[in-house]
Amino acid sequence: MSAHESLEVELKFDVDVDHPVPDLAALVPDGSVAQPQRFELRATYLDTIGHDLAARKITLRRRTGGTDAGWHLKRPGKAFGSGTVRRELAVPFTDPSTDPAEQEVPAAIRHAIMAIVRDRDLIPVAEITSERTVTVLRDAQGTSLAEFCQDRVISHAHQSQHTQEWAEWEFELTGGGKKLLKAADKLLGSAGARPAVSSSKLARAIGTEPHVHAPGTLPKKPTALDFLVHTVGEHVTALVATDPLVRENAWDAVHQMRVNSRRLRSILTSFPQIADPDSTAGLTAELQALGEVLGEARDREVQLEINTRLLAGEHDVPEQLQAVLIDDEIARQERALRSVRYAMSTSRYLRLLDALDDLVANPVPGPDAARRADKVADEGLAAARTRLRKAEKKLSALPPWSPDWVAQVHRIRRRAKAVRYTAGAVAGLDHPRAGKVGKRAARIQSLLGDFQDTVINREQIARAAQTPDLPPRALLILGRLDEREEQRGRTAVQTYLAER
Image (cartoon, rainbow, N blue to C red; front, side, top):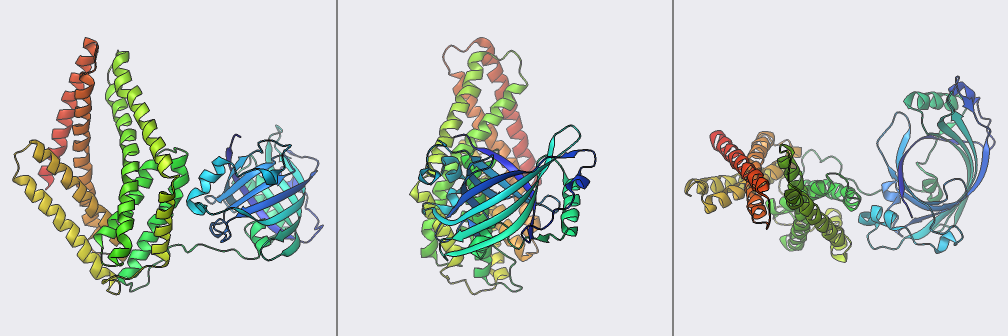
């Protein structure tokens, strides 16, 4: 089964049955309006018993009839003019002759919603039948610009056993833009169509639109627990959002998921007394384990980018060197990504997501829970800065460029990252120094991160030089790369020391 993802941009209206349709030709004065086509669509909508998908305005259905029979997953997208935007992932049925009810949810769709439904059962929650009349609007060249759909709908909700009938119109772009969408909104509204009361047929069928508790704004005088729950909630939302992107190997997805897992761990370790320490100890350990798996994949991703950049300035690169620095790194990256996908398919990972949700929904107060958030935040940021200063002070006592000195530079970078994450967390409390402190920490992290990259690069170059049967030109290139990386590393550290 091949999955296909597209953006659905549409207007949705409620109308009376047999409400007269205005002249759609007015929308395409230089184009044409095709003869209407009629279809009968039968859809079964699936969700968990707790409506986890519906709570996030996500719908999953298997549908027969029409031109796109199969499985459809619709997720909210970014706004586009006055239209509703959804991302649709469509997978045709494996065998059209098989009863759709006997087919399992395709893996591509399962992966896209795994972080939401986890290992909970997907069950039928509603049956919806639509008598649909489709009218295609085309431009002068015959290209489809939009589809106007008139639907007569019958729905049956399984839980409530409630049956409804209604009529609605949809105007979906297929090639047109905002101007056409705006004109259609005006034309159909003037004809008596009313903005739809529900975001989807399923929402209307089940009678309510459940919603997941999203992090809102903090109260004017938040407690430390308010602050923790709000901040953790934001990062959990971001973590769940990146999950399907990591499974698809989307660009930068591993990096973003790693950052979110690190930020979650950082806030729990930087403010250990807000929630009961016994209730969060396991969380921090599991977040660290997840971060390590993601970290290996991210490191391989970065190393491949660096190796590509290092060789970009060289000409006549021998095939053996290309294989060592590029081909072998690609293989290591693919192995690391497989490890990530495996880790994300385990019960251990799903239980981590459950535990994070539980922390947001049912936090166990710790000793600092009722204290003022700004006071606890100030103490947490001050403690992180103190750890950074101590690490910097220790560096001064070590012989420059010695192995211990290089290792300490790496520790300083990690301390700076912790300061940056803590400053970012408390910025929402309007902390007076969070912005400045975070900016300085980010600068240290960047400079020393560049240095650490050169340390790793030079180690890799040294290993590559030991490859049997490398031609002399490959060794010459490696020597040149090593010199450049050594100088780049020294420049980064010298800049850091000069700015202290």
